[in-house]
Length: 465
Image 1: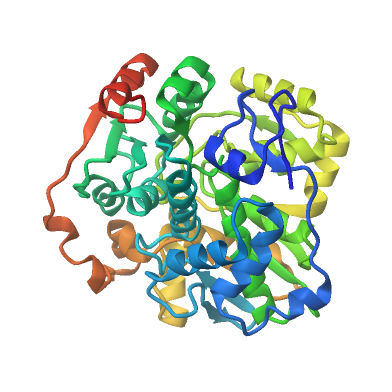
Image 2: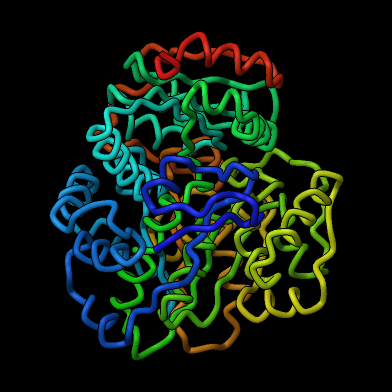
């Protein structure tokens, strides 16, 4: 299995090389040259298996010779050993044929743990046998950062720098990033929004001298290994609901499009996904794209679902690459136009997008009403991001008898103020996270300035040697 850049001008890499590189040297994102297919009987055989075994079977075709079968089995087992539910990703029924896929049972209470815990184990083995050291730089709207710090803290081969928008994440999200005391992890509060943080990270990777000197590596969802790990729970949930003998629909709360793209990958592999619904909050550039064909930036609004307060959805580039016939030059042109404000999808690309995806949105008031509704009708307390997804699921499912699964992206306790305001109940942190509010914080506030952030990283990273 080889990997190519969405912009067509970077070297073709192996899985391990693409994982350690993150962003391609031409500024693009890596994708497989071809999608491996799983036959219906192979999908059916996943039913009833432990989550770890499903992960091994789904991911192995993408790995090439990066790890032996025994090595990868051990990686997967270590990655999910700390999850708080034996099923890892259980389904909870919220209506007659509607479900929430609970992805909040990992160590930082968010779906990012499924990928980050795995990629941490893969990095550790890969760098350990090569004797290498890397500087991991990532941008987060809240959950990726805490998951990355949790996965990599204390590892000798990696220094981790996480950029997050100052004052625009929840207190729990912030404290999960700022209270770890290991010397190899660093939280940087950038005076800007998430898109500013993401732009700084991409600029550092595109500064090839800095990238090489600091041995930069990325663990944002621009890293293909992150997307691959998220493909697994589509398979585990679908077979639990009868796949491949029946189709499933999924609604995915999204900001950076990675989790939705993972569903697209699962469908390309042969999983019978009838529809993928993109759920957005008021930062609805993806919803507007499906409605109008125009992908125009309009500014980021702060909402009660801050992990979705994103306008430049990086992983949408991976889908654009497919929609434009894997034409790297065309993808590069679209990304250049986006920097200038936006672009218009050509008609064939828009038709293909609408064939495979639908979309919905929920503003702050609708999100709060949904949290209250779910609490009243089911007794469940959902976080604002999951509530956005449930609104979109209801508006887009129609009268289909197909099961609809909404991805439950985070534990409600990560957003206690918004949840309490919506339904009158303040969700408590799980016992394993007691003491979070009492721990000392360690954070650096930095301006939205590339040189300032690069200087900070160069001073603190050990990778440059």
